[in-house]
Length: 270
Ligand code: DGL
Image 1 (tube, rainbow, N blue to C red):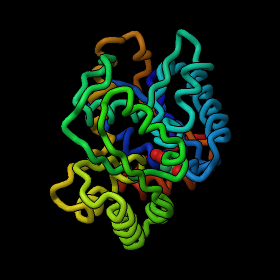
Image 2: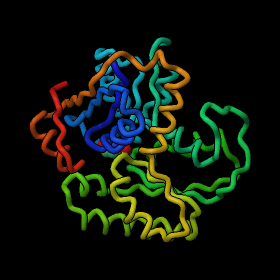
Image 3: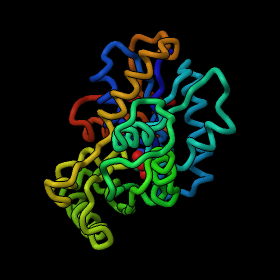
């Protein structure tokens, strides 16, 4: 029993690390669906089906609360899951809402009508499936009015990061930022809407310029979860040690994860 963290693969470890840093006493069970990653190029139906299967696997571990660390799953599947599938005694939360609450200066769970906020031009960088879902714009519209969002699908960046090709990843970030700036020359804020992009935060900031506020998820999600658990301690579970599960090959996923995080990490078969 612990808090579940689901991701399509390794990227969610950026979120897991921030959660573990913020809540060192909380046990997490991380599940990476490496056998089916990446999700960012799949269609919504596929992402829904795979995400439900992953969440069920974490429920079987006793994790009544599951965080979807994956933006693509949060964007393409979460709303449908919450509306039609998640039973009353379980919770599944995503990474978009905490980010939008930070962007729109709202407290957790503030459901008051949408209002004008300071930021007016927001750039969103995400996978093709996240951009296609328009979930970010939908969730933002519940909370803010008059905000213009320009979304850039960042093809290739996830693969370059996973292959450890930093030079290619940086070049791709630069070209995606340039493409976005052709459509929105002066964004005030930029949202890194993918688990892998925090690793490229400096490259995004440099390409965007110092005047653009870059919102990166891991710390925002950690703050939000700590706040949630303080109000809902019964969702914490009783586990004491964190575990890492994968639908892929545990040995090769462990090796890749160690390279990704630059410290040792051992995955077990899910
Ligand atoms: N975890 C995904 C996300 O945050 C990126 C990797 C993938 O496409 O599966 O959108």
